[in-house]
Amino acid sequence: MIYLDQAATTPVRAEVLEEMKPYFSECFGNPSTIYKVGREAKKAMENARGQVADLIGASPDEIIFTGGGTESDNIAIKGIAFKNKGKHIITSQIEHPAVMETCKYLEKNGFEVTYLPVYKEGIVRVDDLKKAITDDSILISIMHVNNEIGTIQPIEEIAKIAKEKGITFHTDAVQSVGKIPVDVNTLNVDLLSLSSHKIYGPKGIGALYIRKRVKLEPILHGGGQERDLNPGTENVSGMVGLGKASELAKNELEYNMKHLFNLREKLIEGVLTIEESYLNGDINRMIPGLANFNFKGIEGESLLLLLDAGGIAGATGSACSSKKLMASYVLTSIGLAEVDSHGSFRITLGHDNTEEDIKKTVELLKASVEKLRAMSPIWNSKK
Ligand SMILES: *Cc1c(COP(=O)(O)O)cnc(C)c1O
Image (cartoon, rainbow, N blue to C red; front, side):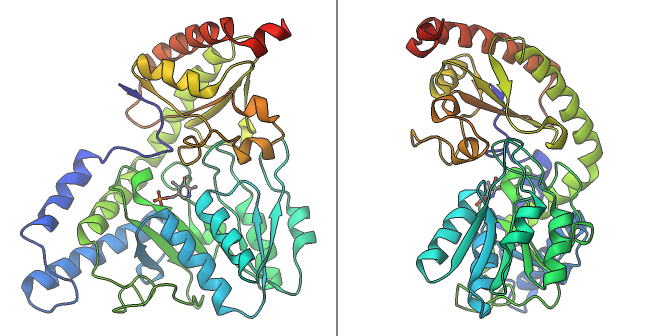
């Protein structure tokens, strides 16, 4: 199989799995206990916290472990919403459901939410943000990199405005960590979410960066672990896995950026030779390993199945919405007609993909698009 859906999830790296193994068996202790196996687990957990902190330029006491990107987003957004008096939140129209649905939930519970537009480029405009801010604004939550189209948002500029206005700023960095440089002080964010399974770590574990002095109201209640924000006996093996994955991501960032950029250049060059095919988003402001294409007159779902039959895994829309036959709200937000949004196909590359993979993918894509168009009423009525 050629796996080209790395934005949906990634395989656990062998080095990561190796590090995790002892924490299922001999080092099984509860980190809150003080005898030897407990102390060992605690030590491993704190070592992992340091590795995660290191990846994003934070200090270890600013990191809490969570159950993944979704949980980090929930703890951050609801945590700020319930801690403050103000009732206004600003986000974008293209957030991941983990942020989008959390904001919609808050809307149902007395909050007011502004969803900033992103235009054809798929990027929010700072002027729109400035206009949206009111005296009641308590939180800005804008993702660093979009999971469907890969565009990079102007986080530093947004942070500057947030600081000036004294508004807490959260970013969902699940798709940027490990793909482009992410440093919490350069970005100047107050809260940042990341997820392990998008960077070759295990699923069900993530982290939330919380800048010193930023206070969150807990949304879960229990034994007080993770600074009261994620109580429950810790997922030590998961933490160790995320820690190791973070270390690898940091060490290999430069190589990966180059590698993925080069592969994607070849991919785009090949794919855009297909008649009436387009690249979504803004090529100059995208992460290196992602390309979201639009093919007129076909269904992305059918394309996905043809590629799957040929041993290639890609995505339509995003993994989270592709089960529903609904137009992707990200693609309609960048101005695609609903019918065209169904003809989109996302390819996300990873460190183990090769030029050979790209060659085969381009060939199969060409053949499959041709085949589908031959039987497409939309395509044929246009001709
Ligand atoms: C995958 C993803 C999430 C959710 O992370 P989980 O660890 O799967 O809960 C959140 N935001 C973005 C941008 C993502 O791509």
